[in-house]
Length: 450
Image (cartoon, rainbow, N blue to C red; front, top):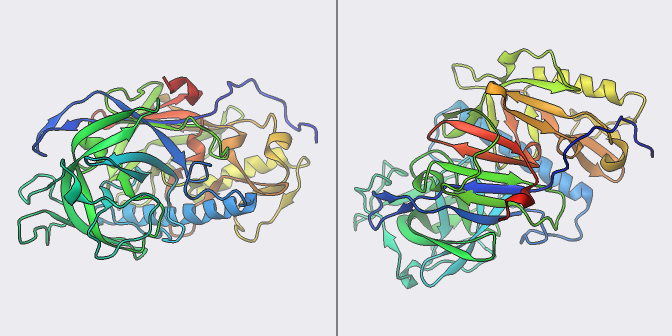
């Protein structure tokens, strides 16, 4: 089918890099020493390098999984934003599918034990499964045994990092305990400790970081995932992002290409802090941005900006998140954008109803063929920062010859706006937690491999 829209002039981009700032802890966990920067490859869930990879999965299989986990993640974010909850408590993440989007390869201890951890900006604690297990779930890599590591030390109760379980935080030996009861039924419990973590770097080398505070989970139930645990990048003092610095960045390429090799994560002062910035606000350990409007065809849509703001009670607002594939808009914003997109589609593509997502805007067609020249949707943030969503970020293949808009309406009772990972494709996204800023730079992530 011939292109239906005038083809725009646009810089071609493809890649994902996350940069994280790492500060190395000294021998005592309460003292921090700033190291050099660290970069590591990230593996998307659907990548050929992922333990979840299924070469027989169909386009519809991928779309249904992304929808299911995105809706579950939205429920978690909504629950966490509305009430004060225990650090890292999760809601709605389905254990058998889990919410893994990007994973990073680390090694723990000395000698090195390889691990695969889920990256999550919506939680704080870094934890892995540890032997001996009272109960452990299946994982792709070996389970870490701290008794065999020469660099492992338990964290004492008087440490400033011993804040995870304030009501029952010490065992009989004065070691710091932690436990998380996730709202999906997952339980993780064990001891906090310090250990050497070694990153697999982007140039196929390794880079050690000493005395990282982490959770050693001995009694774990319900997660049932291939990764060994979670690498939280939230804003609390227990997060690796704040233990090892105040900056991190990631660059996101094509998430639908299973062979895409340039997704990266950078920790430390080498984080790629470039592009226009917008204020970052932390509320209930989530990262909020000031979304001021949405533009289409270089025209600001008539959307009340109050729709994007968090209320005094904590509801609503705009969260940027690494664990949500799709993006979500509160009803008032979604209705306006959806109507404008339909005007552009009328007479060009046939609209279809999708029973699994009745509120979604879907059409017969192929993104790469039938949407050539479709104008970018631009998210306009405070201080002039922008995220431009081209056809690969705005639309999702939902089956053979079917596509749906990847910006969906938040369900009734949840007014949260969420900037998910599809909307962040082809951008380097940098967080400066000390300056309370997020930076967006549109770039080909392969350029950051060096």
